[in-house]
Each structure stands twice: as structure tokens, then as C-alpha cells.
Length: 120
Image (cartoon, rainbow, N blue to C red; front, side, top):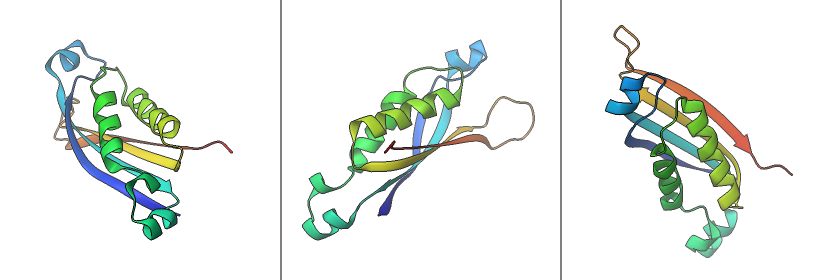
């Protein structure tokens, strides 16, 4: 097994419970870790034998583009798609951080972290 990380995916999106948040939008950071068997691709040196990080980035960007009230909802969509669309992924963890959240005070970010794994 091995882990592929796609870190610090910067996205501008329109998530939040406040009407202003969804109108104005905010900056987000997304970090993704996926666990898969990397031994086959290590031997074959072939892209089709591994998890394509271009695919992972695409899923994150597409799901972040769909406005939601809660980051938990977005995280679940990202995880579900990755597990449904790439059978090599055994487990995935996503961190979504809202940068400079409008919560009153000097707060750099708020982050949610969710993990999902393939059912056997």
C-alpha cells in the first residue's frame, strides 16, 4: 500500500450558511490523501496502474464549485466520487479549510476533516 497526497489545492468557492458568504465567495484550501496499492505502478511505470492525481484535483475542483452550506457536505461529495470513480482507492481523507472565515476575530482558517474507505 501507499499514499498519494495532493496538498494545498487553492480554490475560490461560494460555500456558507450566511447569504453574504454564498454571494461574495471565499478562498479555500483542500488537502487530499488517498491510500492505494502503489506496488503495481512502481513496477510497471504506467499511469493506468496508479491513482491519477490529475483526476483527484479535477474531482476536488468540480465538487468545490457546487455551492453548499456546510463544508462537511462538500467533503462527503468529494470522498464519494473518488471511491466510486477510482476502484484503486481503498481509503481517502480530505481536509477543507475556509481561509479568513467571517466568525469575528483574527482566525486564519477553519478546517473540517473527513475520511471514507471502500466497503469490502
